[in-house]
Image (cartoon, one colour):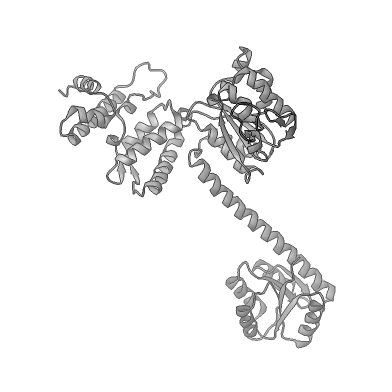
Length: 462
């Protein structure tokens, strides 16, 4: 515990001397004052940790002094009240106003010591809490930077998923299997788990299993020693060593060949790796998070994925919902993507037309969040003002609308009308911008000239 600076404020010199002598013997640095004005002068010049404050004082009473101290130094200074006999109601009032502790007159020196020790423990616990809160905020900001805003949302499915992420992050070593369609953000979830875990200060290493040639699998995952094979001119660390103490993310694990799956399983079970060309094994401490857009359990029953590896990886399984199942999150995502892009590109887009929001909400998003983000980025780039309109979105995005009424096989007349009008509006805008040049208009709409002609004929625009 650090040595504290303590100010004793009492109108009796005898009591000041008695308390000061005791505190100095305990190696505290002591300041003293007989009047509040004198005490305030000391507080301005000295770094004081604790004020021992008598309730009965000249100039102003102790409660008024307490209020001023807590107003001027709300978190820097703790106050211990000294009460006379029968002053308990005043003490209670003082505690409500921010005093940390108290002792009563006549006092024993041990009473002073106990009050200071309690206060010091309170200060240390409070500082730890502030530090933890600061770390949490820093981690939250860091996590936000790492995973962007793509996991935001108020939907129950997202709340449940984030809750699962938080819980498994605190387990530190548990293997995690993340399942979800392409573009749902599987790597972002893995990143989030890593940065919420005790491994957050260590490496997060991402591997795309579908991009690893079978001949290089062992060298890439486990490393090799110099001379292990032709071209091995130096020792090389494998991915397990690079991610040691951290997290290794294996994306598209379903694309890993069966022969390599067996080697991966052995490492997961033994927690040891051997470099190619070496007989020595090295222990590794790595959390493995795997991801796939396929049903691994189904693949295992078809002998296309090792069942034992599936069980090893799927100790804790998280399924990311596709965007079409969390449409209530789309306005939040759109807003945050726009803010993100404004900062990145130094733009000032801050509004979205209702028609655009309806179109974005009705769309089915086969590419999920990745597709939504790309759509917004393109629209923001095309936008010349502060409001996103239908003209800023690709024409093809208007033909993948879902019909919410599952009882109807055909779109309602209102939906057909909206789609037709939106399409015509986009075509007219493109023709206007291109000076009625169909080839240039088609380029603006990101469709072929033939496709544009077909649409113009369909809507009677030729």
